[in-house]
Length: 89
Image 1 (cartoon, rainbow, N blue to C red):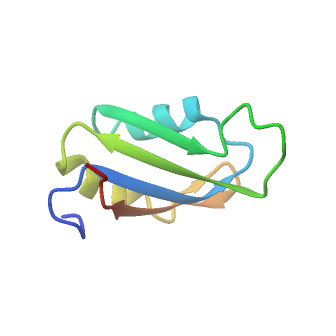
Image 2: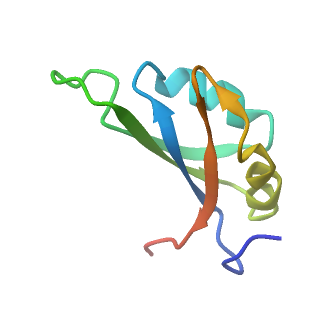
């Protein structure tokens, strides 16, 4: 179960600066249908950053609980932190 009832959004932090939105869509797409994915800073950002943050909105809130199981999974060179996130309506 997710920490925020009914939410279909997860926040993924501690992402390597080398991660692309396509890689995130591939990894998290196995857990449920993704409605929207936003990676910050975006793939085409002119400046380099030490880490990135990703917000993933699933079609089904049940996918949030499944996605949280990827917390501490090493992806590229960092351990992911996946937490439920409140949605803006």
